[in-house]
Length: 459
Image (cartoon, rainbow, N blue to C red):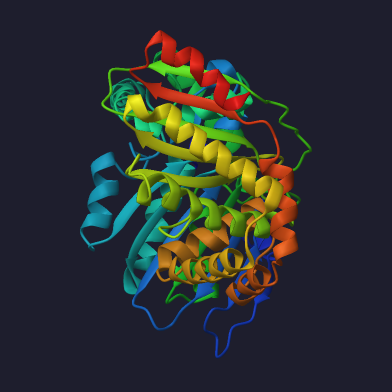
């Protein structure tokens, strides 16, 4: 059966099978942690990590499309499509899709980001064939019917409203706009009320056909799995949909580019009747491919990554000015962000911003102590390992690595890269990143006099 998303040709499956290529990317001990990759005809990549000690498996499909691939008129189309792929295929209704996974006690979901989308299911290892069949059917056979588009529009508008009702979440979208402006990286992943209302089934369907070609997809599976069995099941599902008939196709390369953010000193304020003022103070960061990202990760951890971090100690522990205060980094293919978030009483916003700005300026000029850097390295190494203790996290790691880097790094290699960061590395990246003039985004019930003073925080 041929789905609407893919068109079959006269080539036979035996011709397609002849060009499959399998590699061992990471060789684990006794097969544990072994990562293998097979590139199927049609450019579809299948990556697995074997962990025989567990009884579960997580299967996911990553698509090389995110909100930054949208035009202004299509803003929100990627996320809209994420919803619609759960609404039914030629073989299954929306109820059939959810009931199949619920019946085996599994979990199924999806998420959309600025540069990729992922659909996944976590099940018992014995139910992996079912999960593969359901998720592959969704990705290759979605109907995208007009009635489903109209029904789901209401759900997405409610999701936008829910986000806007959470200023602690909404302020990060505002900060992205502050830093990137009106280009794709500065627009919200969910879209806006106006753009979502304007999207039609036909436009979303064309978007689907363009971006869900097998060359744009990475299949990732982790847990108690056999690589060759996963490959056979995935190949069978995609061939059934007529999606693996091109033998000359090659996978799309990871994103690249040299986009530079030149934003400095911008201030965006959004008046809301909230109990707190929500603040993000930040500046350009590093692209996810930048080798200095390991040093930036240590710097971020020491500055605002835990209860012993500078910002937490200065803002919350010593002065009690905020309950939540932290720093974070966001890395994209060609640029990045570094930000500090705090939620505080509106009357305290200027004090909080002054403390945060003073700490950033001090670290930019004087760096961190060796003790702080050592503690941050230990914290980052531990959190890296603990964050990979389930099959879902492992699937995310290998899927995102293949899609975004085109390569895999073992956990031991990651830990070694973190451990190799020196105090000079951290001080160098602190001077470069924190030495820039920051920009500021604030949501809260700010009076005119307060708003005018906020510009002083980035002067």
